[in-house]
Length: 433
Ligand code: SAJ
Image (cartoon, rainbow, N blue to C red; front, side):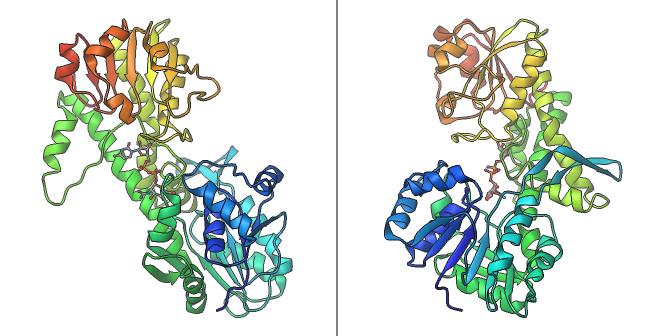
C-alpha cells in the first residue's frame, strides 16, 4: 500500500508523537484534534504536553510542512485514531455482585464518525486507543460502514495498541515490538506496511480482538502481580514478618518474581485497563476484580500504618514526601500517594506535601515548594514515593532538618539501622509489629 497522506486523529500523548514521527519520515500528516487550544498551541509551534524530545520533533515536523493541523479529518490513505478512553465520572456499572467503572467510548465514537465523510475505497483505518475487547468489531465496524463501504472488503480496519512508557515515548514508539490486529489478514498486512515506515521493533500481525486483549492482558498481569505483593505485605504485618526480606528470598527461586508492595497502584494505564475486562465480562473477571479491589484499598492500608505509628491523627502534623504515581516522574494521575494524603486529611491530620517534580501539586492538598518547609514542623514523616532524591537522603542530616522522630516508609527505601542510629523510629510497610 502506498501512503501519500496520513490523518492522525487525537493529538495527545500518543497521537502527537506518532504524527510527528511519520512526518519525520517524509510522510505528509494531517493532525486532527477537537480541542481548539491544542490546535492553536501547535500552530504557534509549541506543544501542550511534557515528553522528552517531543517538542523538537513536533517543531521540525511543522517547519518541514509535513505536519499540518486541522479541526476535521481530510481525505487520506490511512487514518489513525488515538483519542482518550477514560471512565465515566458519574456512572458506575453493577453486575455479578461487582461494582465497576465504565469506559467512556464517546471520543472513539465521534472520531470514527468524523472519518465517515472522507473514507474512500482502499483506505486503512487503525484504532490505537486502549479499548474494551471487541471494540473494533462491535463499535468501529458499524460506524465506519455507515459510509456505504464494507470493512475488510472496501477498506482495511485494524487495532494496534500503544505500549510506550511515558518519559520514553519517542524512543519506545520506534523500538518496541508492535502488534497489529486486522479485521482480515489483508487489513493486518496493510497496518504492517503503515507502521513499517518507522517501527524498528518486531511487528506481529493478528486479529483485532487478539490485539485488544494483548494490551489489556499486559497491564492486567502487572496489576494482579502488584496486588499479590500488596496482600503479602498485609500478611507479613499480621505474622510479624519482614515482607521485603521474605520477597527477596522467595525471588531467589528461579520461577518466582514477586513485585514490590507499596501504597497502591496509580497512573493512567495499570489502574485503569483491568476494569475494561471487568466491565465486559463481570461473570469471569473474578481474580482481576479482586486484584483491583486490593490495590485500590491499599491507600487505606497505608493510612492504618500511619495511625499505628502515631496514634490519633487529629491535629497531627505530617510531612508527605512525594505525590507522583511512581518514582522520578511528574505524573500525578490516579496517584495512590495523593489518595493517602486525602485520607490523612479526612482523619484530621495537618498534611504538608512536597512533590519535587510538580511543586504546585494538586487541588485540595497543601503543597510546599521545598522539603525543608514540609518537614520543619512535622510530627511524622511519611515516605510515599521513592523518588531518587528521597531515597538518597542522609538520616543524620535529615534529623537536623525536622523535629519529627517517627518515620513511615511505604517503599522500603530507607535502611532501618541507619535511620534508627540517627534517632528515628522507622515504621515500614509489611514489617509486622
Ligand atoms: N507499582 C508497584 N509495585 C511494583 C511496580 C509498580 O506498586 O512493583 C506501581 C507504581 O508505583 C505505579 C503503578 O504500579 O503506581 C504503575 O507503574 P508501572 O511502572 O508498573 O507502569 P506504568 O503505568 O508507568 O506503565 C505501564 C507499562 N506496562 C507494563 O509494564 C505491562 C507500560 O509499558 C505501558 O505502555 C503503560 O502501562 C501503558 O500506557 O499502558
